[in-house]
Image 1 (cartoon, rainbow, N blue to C red):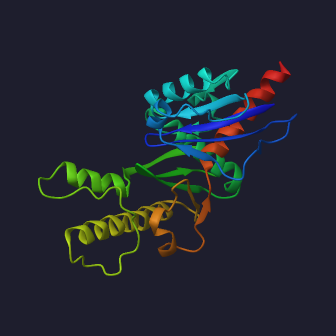
Image 2 (spheres, helix red, strand yellow):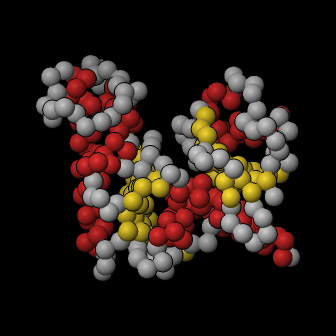
Length: 260
């Protein structure tokens, strides 16, 4: 069966086609996922795919999800459409309000647990509009996490909430040549870099101290962001755990439907 897994975020939509055959795992049709900004769907008439496929989608933005579905249905490339729900994800969710947890965070936690967490707890880091750090135990229990602003979001907030600071959120965040900025731009970009680096180090360190054994740490998507080279060498990086999680859920849904 030809399927597409898609992750609808606040700033981009990522999607990847592939095959599900028999009881086997998802086989990607491309080496890397493709990404499009949601607003471009309204202006770009080109279809996202050259062939029809069954879509399995997770979303944290209903407006962008509707845009994607309208685009795919107009191009006749979505004979079926499944939006992954909390109940579809085979994790125990040990938080106060399970339905309030972003589906993308749970899907990343599921994939991290399946791929790396059979003998250890797993810490999952994703750096995008938000910087999230989540914990899933070796038993497959999602324990919650930490949410903070991503570096571009922090820069945009400084501009929006002050009268004099410019908006540098479109700039690339990277290790500054010197900590002390000699201009407003340098100072803000340095601040965005070191705030994120310190937050990652201290948050993961605090999580490690709270566990009996050291967890596996894995970044996904934006992952460790611009701080990758400054973080421990044993922290892992995976292209896209969210899409991996969607493919796992899709396989489960399809296999269960075939067996009934």
